[in-house]
Amino acid sequence: MKHSNILVIIPCYNEEANIERVLERLLRTRPDVDYLVINDCSTDQSEAILQRRGYTHVCLPVNLGIGGGVQTGYRYARDNGYEVAVQMDGDGQHDPAFLEAVTAPVLAGKLDLCIGSRFVTKEGFQSSALRRFGINFLSGLIFLLSGKHVRDVTSGFRATGRRMTAFFAEHYAADYPEPEAILAATLRGFSVGEAPVIMEERMGGVSSIRSFKSAYYMIKVSLSLLVDRISIKRRKEDGQ
Image (cartoon, rainbow, N blue to C red; front, side, top):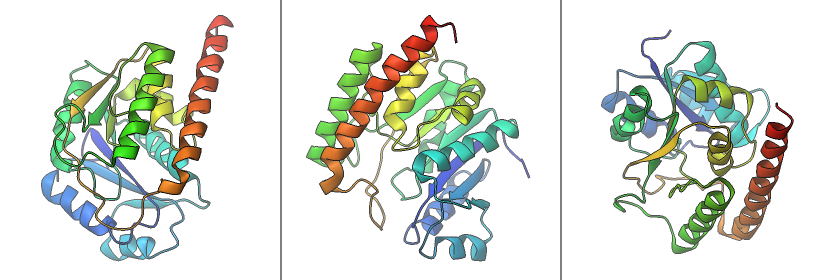
């Protein structure tokens, strides 16, 4: 049942070590907002925890990956008329105390997409040197392709307004979509910005981006961004 104009979307895949703490922290800190956990066919005890504790959640029939899981949340937010949808990871890195920071510019109509950035004030967990290099590289690439400078392009802590939510409900990248979503939003004329937040290290479990996959991840995302830029430009030229 809808109680708020803000929906927090929490993707969950094998987060048995984190999900209960994440949700209890959210409920303590921001009991005024609605939330929805998207359980993406977890193979651990995540689903059992969600059911036992009575948390609001949906279980996908097939594994869709982070993009498909988050898009499910955007579709739910759109269909139920939420004014703001907030993506927040299920691994404990995102502090719900900063929900106000990322939602305020959206609620005020200043931004369509507000990204919680750890690199504005550079407080809290800053990730590893290797990942920061990759983030800076992707940030530079997005700037070259769109003219928009965003520091924390891989941040999964972000808020969207109604128009942006409706767009993502229909158009969202399947794999590691955060950088692609920024590029797509910017090239489509949506207003994109950042708000300073403090992030923490993952509470437990394993990140979906392992160190041995880093080179593959960078190549894949870079190529996807280039393809997206060409595709969107052609659609605009064709009047679509």
